[in-house]
Image (cartoon, one colour):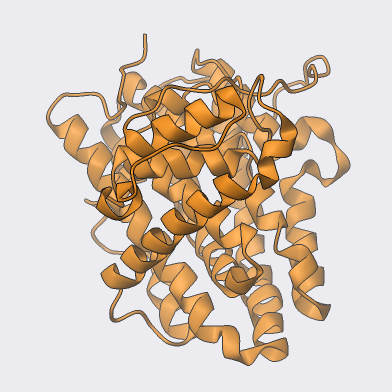
Length: 342
């Protein structure tokens, strides 16, 4: 086990991130609406004609979801519930959900069927991004990977917390127990988002919240948008539990390989510690989430089982798309980011 780094001085109050420029008609409409205080202005067919997996729609969704987290510098907090922005978000969400279901025609109908393939480590890890980083990843690739993942890890566990008031009994108790660990078990310096900020410091990255949004390609935005989509809709609480279970089940083996990658490249104690912490914590969380959260929810609301399976399958789909994007760029000797890091 690695020795955790000594905690630094208390962090300053978090500042709201800056708005980035749009990447197409929809995201331009959102950024201009947020800057001006007016409604989003776009053509009548902008949502239906946009590429649902593309930069424009995924960035527009991300910006609208971010209003429910920390908002943006200079943007009125009241825009979180602006009816015109919510209407646009609803239309894009409908397309996103339809696209996910269209890519998953044979999604398992039971939680057991959805989780079973994830419980067995594949014999061939050639397609595993964490395996690649652990065996021959280069420091610049570790930095790119961390910059990409920072869009979630700097708010780690926040989207999953939305499901807590929508659960009861055993499922709620188990979910809160896991989240308590994610948020440092009462110690600010051990909050997982703080540990990831320390990792970024070790890698020479800027740990400012939202700093690398403009670098993030559409496949990465989609993975974070999926959590926000599931978390913000009570009707999708089963899908969020499926997503959460998928993440916890797959986290420990991948974290072990990423800790090895950080150690092999001499990234630093904090960089290695972030993943080493997840090896131990998520091995326990896997059991709690499967038997406590999923098992408890199925006892209380058995009709949600197909949603749990869908949430798991959608998570695997989007993580595989992201891994393909990153590997493809690196295989061509190119950055996986929209703009290479300095």
